[in-house]
Amino acid sequence: PGRPASTAADVISTPNVSRAACGSHDGDGISLLASTRILICISSYDLLQLVHLERLLDLLRDMCEAGALPEVYIYSAEPWERGLREMIADRMHCFRIRKPLPLKLILLPKPVRLNLVNYHRSDMYARLDEFELFVYSEDDIAISTSTVAAFLAEEAELRLCEGEEAWRTHAPAFLRYELNASFAFLNDSNRQRMREVTRVFWEQQRPLTAKLVPSALPSSKYLRITRPHTGAWMATRRQLKWWRSLCRFDKATRRPGRGGQPLLGTQRVWMAGLELFHQRQGRCNIVPVLPLQAYQAFTLHHLSDKNFQRVGRKGRLFRHSASVDLVSALELH
Image (cartoon, rainbow, N blue to C red):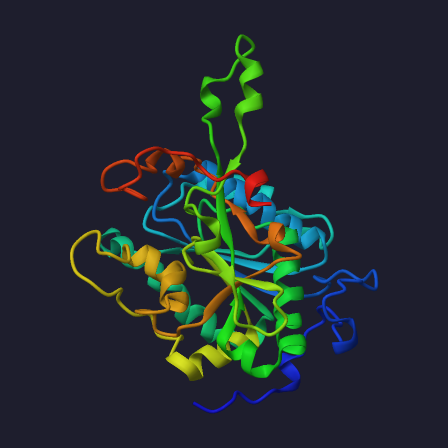
C-alpha cells in the first residue's frame, strides 16, 4: 500500500514537536487537548459493570473541562431505564461548555453477544473527518485526561522524531494494572492492611527484560510490548487513515482459531488490540511501543481489579507458574 496523503485536516492543535526538541517534553503552556475533538467508543454489553462505566464516564467529562470536545458512544445489549439515562446525563454536565457531553447509547440485540465489540469500527470511519482522536475501550478501563494528552504528544513525537517509516509500523500502546486487593474487606478494624495494597501488572511475567524489550527504533527511547491486549486503544485520524490503507482496519474481522477460548482469546480480546498489534496472527502487525520517559502515562487501571487473582490458576494466565509473585508498580519503575 502507498503512503497515506497528508491533508490540512490531519494537522491538529496538539504538541508542537520539532526535531530540535525531540525527547525534551518541554511545553509552551498550551493545553494539548484545547479544542481537540475526540470520539470515544465503549463496549458495555450489559449493566453488570455499571459502577466501572460510571467511573470511566467521570474521567471523560474531565477531558471536556480540560479543553477537549469529547463525544461518547456506548454499545450495549441491555436497555437503560429512564432514571439511569437522566442520572448519567446530569453527571456528564461539562461546566466549561455549560451542557452535558454528547452521549449516544446504541442498543444491539442480545444474541450479538461478544460480537458487540465489532460495531464501533464502522462508526469511527463514518465520522473520520469530524474528530482528531479516536478511542476504543471496554467499560472497565480508566481512560484519563493525562492518558489522552500523553498519547497525542507521543504519537506526534513518534512521527516527527523517529520518521515516517517508524510511524507507519509502530504506535504508542498501553500496559494494564490492577490493585491487588478487594476493598470490600477493609474496615476500621483492619485498615492497616491498606499498606499491602499496590498496583500490580499481572499480565507481565518475569523476567521483564523478556516481555518489555528494546524496540528496533534508532532512538532507543521505546520498549516493545510483547503482550499487547489492554482492553483499549487510541488512534489519531491520520493513523486510522493509514491503517485502512494498510490492512483494511475499517472492517471488523473474526478472531483466528476455534472454540470459546482460543489461543489468542475471544472476539473481545481480538478487537481490543490483538487484531492491530499481534505480530504473528494480527491483521496489521503494528508494533506496540511504550515511551520510556513517559511510560507511567501509558498505564491503564483495569477497574474491576479481579484478574490478578487468576494468575497461576489452571486455565488462566501463566498456568504453569509454580507460585504467584506479581510485578508491582515500584518494581516495574
